[in-house]
Image (tube, rainbow, N blue to C red; front, side, top):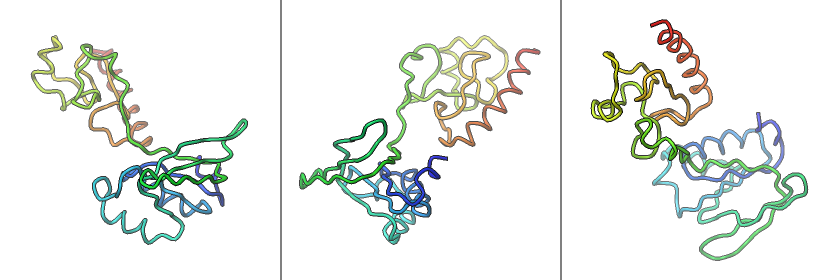
Length: 190
């Protein structure tokens, strides 16, 4: 939806992973120009080679490595963005009103520590991803394994980006939610 708001305008995509690369490629078909800002010195460690090649070949994308946003200006809405090359210190300001941040996800789950099983990155473990020791630590009281999307706490489900192993896409989260509706009916009936 947001992409339609920037038709024929300059946009910024911040990030150097596959999601950022895919967003930049998609936006290059709609926007006037895409500036892709990446803090790292390259993309090889965080992006598929085929996507790197497509970005480098796309005339509608300018890839700016070692670059970060240092200032946002506007009154009521974004009107300009200043970015700086971290290596040279050189800064540029552009009249751009659209930024897409694709910098990854850090789950806000610290408050769940000790309540439900989390993976090493802090995402909620569900269903088959719950190991026997996860269930033992949680005191799993039921004679069955957790259902798909069920956490280490019986009848508590997690879907979408917060779930360990999710694909981090809205459509997937919606699909997971619709599956959980049926599972909730099952646990309430049983």
